Length: 494
Image 1 (cartoon, one colour):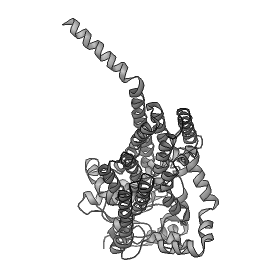
Image 2 (cartoon, rainbow, N blue to C red):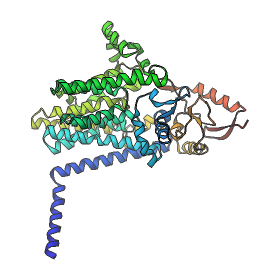
Image 3 (cartoon, one colour):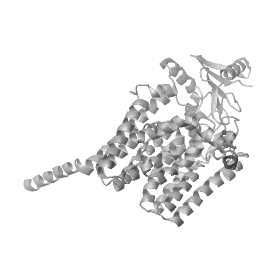
Image 4 (cartoon, one colour):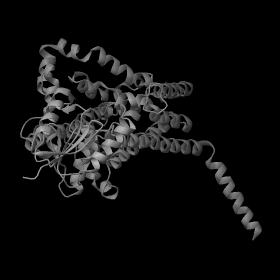
């Protein structure tokens, strides 16, 4: 018996040594990094949420859509500008939000959406590992490149950019690329189909990927069918779904007014006045944006230029857009470019000699870590990037905001300023100051003057002050809380 037990212990010891050596050690290291990365970013976001530094735009908006779905009204939201009750599909065609309702039912908190986003983005490291393992032929190099994906600063930033369905396209596209690279068409179709549900423009990215598969990989029939399917999704979403739900064309045409104002208008401008297109896409901010995206990858995606070119449609969309957030590398708009650039690095390095591959992997990992330490959303970053991005809220003010929110009944309709919105979105009627609508309560932070517009928003302290004065003087509203520039009003009884 003792001999048998000893042999078993020896066998287990050999197994442990085997797991902790070679390929298994690198796999364990990657999984550990994913857990630490996800946990750290979630804790950062939890602190931001509890300190009222996250806002209605966009965490609160997504929270209302998911809460409404779980409550039996799929994707029902309150338009932040007009106060009209409508389907989310009239603004963006991202029905994947409805799939998050089960998560909400299990843990009903805006932080649930945050956790889903962070974990989903971290899982993108797995297809990067698999692609790199296949093309580099070395487990250590593959794991290092997957670690570089996690270290890439903009991946961390987009993982904590509030919550955006479009961000979920990053891991879905990476998994889809892996399956497509393996010619496994059914799981690719599942991943691509799920990615389409994250936004109306994702069809253009899928169409570009289909062209890559058709002409770079020689699978013309499947590739062209993929392109047609992707373009069809975008066409139906933009030209049919949004107008049918909202009653008008997409508001986001407006960001392209300077270059034509619509897809057809942009094409016409490109033909008749190409210098306008070139000028719009090559401002100082645009060039800086591209440098920030490319530098941590050392430009090595150019080793697989055809795959890297799949990112061109999204670059065109962001560089031609007339608002600054589109070319902020910390924003969710990188979802249509980064997956293809990272995959192009993994595949492109495989075309070098073994020494060249190793040097390329080390270079990308080193640069990504260096950029992340300097610019990433980490508590110890030299520039205190998180604070500079979301601003600071003192403990005293955070306590006042917390008390104000606690006064509003869970089922009451409410109008709020932006930062308070992430805490009050779990209700049917949810307005943004200065819209009141049928609100029974108004919760107002006099230091938060950001107000939404049809595209984006801006700070309007004069409008906020005028609104506050009007409400304070109105006999229709009763002040029930005032502390640290935070005010709560309840609609007076008739």
